[in-house]
Image (cartoon, rainbow, N blue to C red):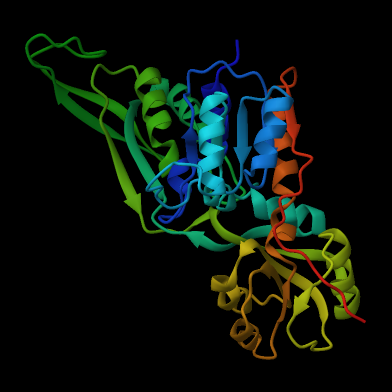
Length: 368
């Protein structure tokens, strides 16, 4: 029997809630984790039409990119859409889950999907998240080194950039004396013991700390495990805002802009002044990415694709970069496919659907 928590725990392992921005409201917004789940409907926005679709298709869990409840609700009397959705969702026992900026901040999240559609290669995070890495230092008997190290790797430690199973070890001598009632793995209680040990060091994401420490205690032979868990100032190149990548070959600006219109199904692509440059290094940020313009410039991007740019934002191009605003919905629409792909792969025999409702609130009037 599938529970709502089975879905949400998988999503939070992929994009931990701790990675959401301080202003965000990701997570299970409505419903209970122990509800039996009859099906999942993936969407960008939760609207009344989407809720009705979930009900008609017997999906009692909606997974949305944008949170339905963003600011506080002071009353729930059905006077506006959010209130009506909350009322109907509760009446029909439909849970609503949001996976927003935490999904923006993982390498294979929203921006990773955009990068793959553009064909970008050798991608890296444009603005790496700081203070999200830790270093674990522990001491283990020589004969148990590989068992402990393997356990730490399997729990998620040892990733540095695109490298995995990274560690450092050095041999030394450990000393300890067990007190009354202890049962040391080596040595005798009450006697000073000297043991040839290995100092083992691994880096890990802060979000993996609990799992890694659990693996350490499970695999380590000692009754009391000595370790240090230190916060690092190093930027985490696997987590953060935006992505930077390279096209397989340079493309002229006009052709590049035309391809954006096609890929994003964008009826209008607003852009800064054409510079006559070839485009090869491209920065992307789904949704509102104005805050990353300087980062894209400093990274040497010839183009930056994002949304929600204001009039004065285009001046920040400074005749050095092509800024392309494809629209908010247009830039994030593929998040629904991303969610569908990951959930369907994890739960291949379970009903996971993508909404057929277009929730784009922006319409265009063409006048010739």
